[in-house]
Image 1 (cartoon, helix red, strand yellow):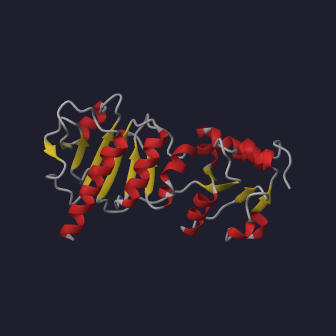
Image 2: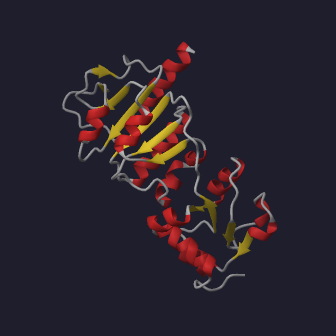
Image 3: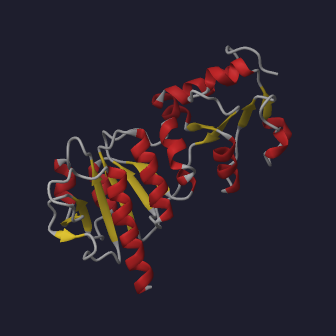
Length: 252
């Protein structure tokens, strides 16, 4: 039973929960909550160790070697939790390192999106809509921020999520038509050619970056009621991605 927050494993989990630089250096992430951990395990990702509170968690619920299930006092779990109401279990996994598909046919590019909840929701939506890879440009929130991981609900284990500079993003997507979501776009979202594509979703607060505008071939828009505000980035992404999904299924 772990009782001290000075334990090396406890200190590692705390750092992974709070420091992007530690996640990048160690190439590890912390997943919190029974459902998220079980989802990662079901997708054949192996946990390095799992800390759990015996008062709330049955270790037999996890299909892992008993040796990596480590009980910890409630105060320790509370210390390493990133939530106001700890779920009683936190696991450390190697950072997912999915390989980009070749050829790439359906990609999503997040341009300077900084809200963890929005980004996590978009990743979850992208996985459900059949996106193969999601690129996060410089300036976007860390893809493995704990709030992003929780909001994404396991999407990190179902699609390739990569953080890249614009030169690399442009190179990966150079064979695809690149659509930039913009409320004053030139192509209506349900009239775009979604057979193969890369879709850029930009920041609500700052709009599309110069780099995003440079690599885009078209701007695509969702018609809205006159005088309406722009849509939330996650909502706009969902509308467009599932229209692309509908068109893909219709023509396949």
